[in-house]
Amino acid sequence: MKANLTSGLVLAFLVFTGGRFAAAPNDPTATAKALSAVKPTLTIDNSPVSESKTPAATSYADIVEPVQKAVVSVYSTKIVRERATTNPLSHESFGEQVPTREAKEQGLGSGVIVSANGFILTNNHVVEGADELNVSLPDGREFKASVIGTDPKTDIAVVKIDADNLSTLVLADSDKLRVGDIVFAVGNPLGIGQTVTMGIVSAMGRNNLQLLEGVHGYENFIQTDAAINVGNSGGALVDAKGRLVGINSAIISTTHGNIGIGLAIPVNLAASIMTSLTESGSVTRGYLGISVDPVNIEIAETLGLKKDTKAVVITIVTPDSPAEKAGLKRSDAIFSIQGKPVTSVQDLRLLVSQMPPETEIDMKIIRDGKEKTLKATLGRLTDDNVQNELIPGVEVIRLSDELRRRLDIKDRIDGLVVTNVERNSPYFDRLAPNMVVLEINRRPAADLTGARQLLQPGRNLLYIYNRGLYRYIAVIKEVR
Image 1 (cartoon, rainbow, N blue to C red):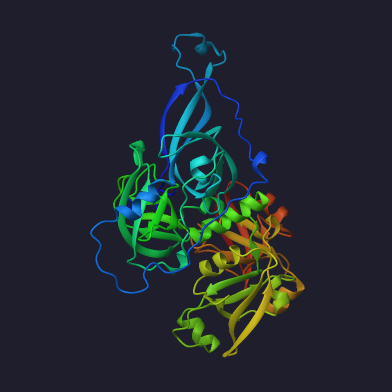
Image 2: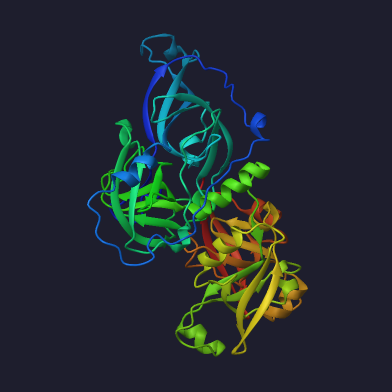
């Protein structure tokens, strides 16, 4: 985790890790391959939690009781090798090999049964690196569990136990949640046993928390003040009808304990990831092929938009991308996709990533002051079109003839065009979209692979072309 997110704050996942004890490893017997033909059956209720004003409740026991039956504890075991304690006067001091021993490291998280045939939603960080998984049901039964699939970019994992006729939770439509809705957090905090806490939805759409920055993840958290603590990872966040609205994932805290800022992954996002993992074993995401900036007052005035316009403006259209084929152009302002508002870079990224390739989407745009509707067929997000990172948080593409024309760059200029700089990038204040990296350490930056090889740990000198001017920019590449 980043230590400098906010002074005194700790942003932490909620998996509880116990002690270690010496042991020999057991060969894992559960395998996802044997279960690949089995699919989950989900129950979904899309109605909002409150249709009208309702009288105050004196007890939520009838709502909570069935929920408890579908929330489980997930125990992970990792085999680690550690140095054995030795006498400092032993043979070690004469250069002989230091003895090691195998040990088991145990962790505890929670999970939610969402299909009666044993499919469970939990967090990726609950199961990541585990050599063995066990699931404990509220009725005392225990099962070996298999990992069906994981998605580190959203911190979602799907595991499966060999059981039928299990209690499940109905999935709500998390897009219909509102700030102020009552919610309950259910899980096994600190290993003390299943616990239910109550609160409200404190905020929606929390992003830029850097919780998943190491994997360029997709953050879109529900914030709640329902008390959740270490061990609640993967547990249920449910609404006042007992429907699943989120998977508890992390906390922001000054003490590593609950201070009323908990984060949960919306169930709509979790369900879409689960569908992809159970159908194909991996996550497929849509790809549009544009770089955008949020529309602020200055940009709105320049483009002839209303000052209060909530949208994003296209800065670069990737050649031969779905966006280019759909007719999108630089300076187009996108304000909705599939009827959902697009007010930030994160909105666009999340919306597109949650739709499968080959999906035809409607985009509402403003071009030259006039509203238009364009259709695009999404491509597939792959390593080729997502891993364009030159240095942390800075994405580039090869300068093409089309980009030269759009950016009004002379033919003699050659290099890599910066398409995006993440706000949490250490280079955010030095590099910007549409800059062209001509050289790195006084050698031509002809392509991304070659450019990466020119970078060295420590100080690097970038020769940049930007809006008719040339200059050198020094950047520090951290040793990882």
